[in-house]
Length: 84
Image 1 (cartoon, rainbow, N blue to C red):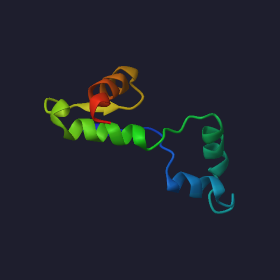
Image 2 (cartoon, rainbow, N blue to C red; image 1 turned 90 degrees about the vertical axis):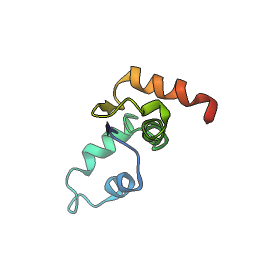
Image 3 (cartoon, rainbow, N blue to C red; image 1 turned 135 degrees about the vertical axis):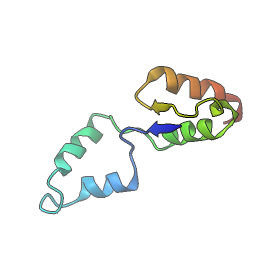
């Protein structure tokens, strides 16, 4: 299975947002994405990875999942709720 995690708020994102525009010209773009709240906390894709590695994802071989799919995110949260 493959996971498209989307835009995740990582340490690298912090570095990009804090970088000098001369070093990273697209920093403004990522600062705006952050300002709009479009970055996922790392825990959300991490849960999806856990789900895929568990018995819940056993039948997911060959499939691609995206964190932008609300149904997939809801399924992960519902299935893992008793374990988190």
